[in-house]
Length: 85
Image (tube, rainbow, N blue to C red):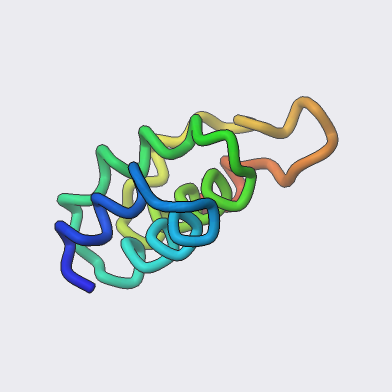
């Protein structure tokens, strides 16, 4: 998929498509995905949030992920750690 297609999917796709898009945006390596990945950190799906954080780390944008984000509930991994912070 192209960057444009993945950006559309992460915003408008079904749950699994958003998760896949978040992961693929990191693999694509285009820093143009950074803003969409940051926005996806607020997605209702934990899978989207986790893959977005990991992809931000792959893009070298882990500073965009607050340390400890998501870790306070004890029910999901610390998103800051997933981003490599």
